[in-house]
Length: 327
Image (tube, helix red, strand yellow):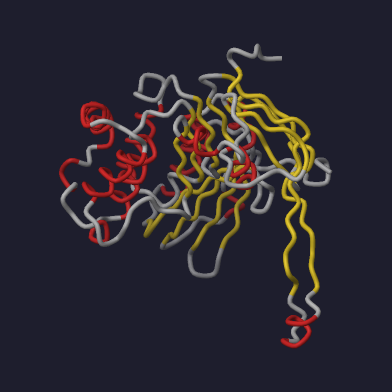
């Protein structure tokens, strides 16, 4: 049990039930006698997160990850249970809570397409109550990591995806929040922007002392930015474990397009990987969970030796706990 002084987030037996309309296929019936379905998005979730903790949240789509974040930042009320975030009741005291919280949801933008990035930042700094001196100081600190000064004058609609996401992150952090909530912040980003985010939130970065909640499907991002992972399944908390153990839950796969792919029966790493050969020269290689990177690279070298490789693509996915076990 964390002491009350260091406790930032506390959830006790929290549930959230959502009612949705079901379409019957009949417009008349849907209009006059609509049928409804209840979904338990969160089911009896209890957890505590201390000051400065870096928490990764994982789970299949529909497992309750985004709902959990919305409950914590006050966007959504609970059906049952108690929530305290930095001493606030999030839904009832959301305005006060947001003064100390930075939020970035992948599907919600801070930026207005027809405004310049400079004007968007100024707008959010004013909304957060920052003085000119505070804004100037905060901008200088964040710009060391996100480097947006070169395109501040551009309209948001003209920015690349990576530039826009750096601007989104700037808006979320301009008031130097104590709690940072990020929902899939690195999905689809270029390597440079991912590195900037990792440096910003890393052990020696500007946000290193902040409490972080991060939803991500990317093992590398979780390993770099978090210390503990919470796994959700069917709205329930299925697991809590050190992020370092994520390596033992990560499936590594390669899609290799070869001119003359080797026969899979001749590859010596059958105890470390599974090979599937396609009709057009593709070779799918799925490595066993927990295999070391040296073995991965040795296997790839053997496949590509004396062959012409047209393309190679690596993907990583996290194996989630059994959804039935979480029920």
